[in-house]
Length: 167
Image 1 (cartoon, rainbow, N blue to C red):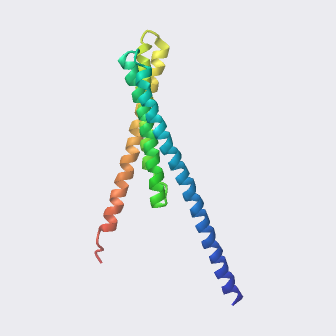
Image 2 (image 1 turned 90 degrees about the vertical axis):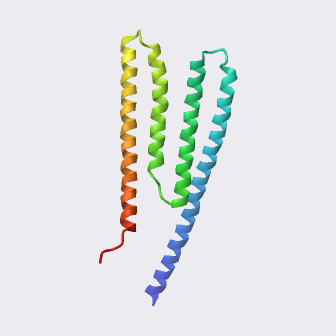
């Protein structure tokens, strides 16, 4: 009988610890979500302020600055989606982070491409920029393939779950 009471007490402590950790985990995720949302607002306001500040610069410079900042906003929004998904499903989902990686690579490719155009007459620096763009492009392909595999795996798992048993 003492063993049974001990086991019930242990189970109650485990349930309490699980609830406390779940609340702490949710608090951390909500804090991250609020900070990411605040970061999005700050970045959008900053992008609106870029246009008047750069009005005397060439249009390509203004567009590059805007695109650079807006891609950063997309990264923040995708991270916010990852946090929201984690809160809802109670598991860490890889796909949003892969998308963030793709967006970060694209952001760097855009910046490096514009910089590389300015380095055409500087051989080694131009070659280095081209290699960086190539590596980032390859990374985009790898991350896209990973997303494809994850979605294919999820589709197959859903198909297997919905398939009626033959027996």
